[in-house]
Length: 201
Image (cartoon, rainbow, N blue to C red; front, side, top):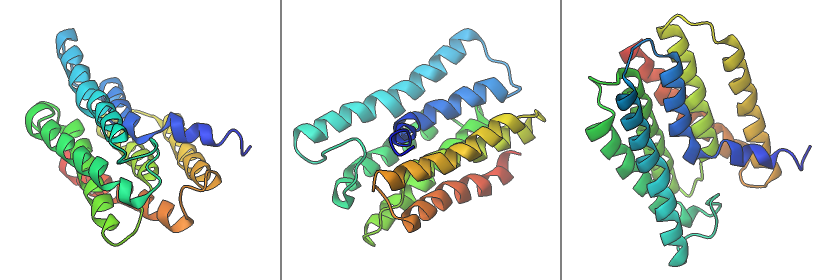
């Protein structure tokens, strides 16, 4: 089991969460968009939340600012998280606006707030689990979409609740976090998303 668990850290790496959230938005949201609109939406998400962070990662690695994609050291997290905040800011200001994609907009606002909390905690020498922030945020968003559109997604929700546990276990097995860091990460993802449900449910 210890050999299998690390797989979940890579499968649900935080870099995949924005894209997964967008996929579930398209699958569960009752609003209709044309193919070009879907294409532009996914293109923006992939460029801003996936390709640019990867480019920044390799740039920072080249200059010796970070060692691995897991960002295990506190000192190595500040620049990537600050860059993530900037990219989320661009996304919710210019691309995923509240008038065009209301629920998805608040998903990314929640992601911005969660990232801000994780960034601020670094100055207290505390390393909140970004993996738990991502998976808990996504779980709440899926629950919100199912309630908003009155769709029964109990199997999907159950799956992601289990994934929360498996991701947490994988981080423990990999000695990446303590129980406290996992719990705080979970809450940093859960609380903003849950609070923002008020504005779009």
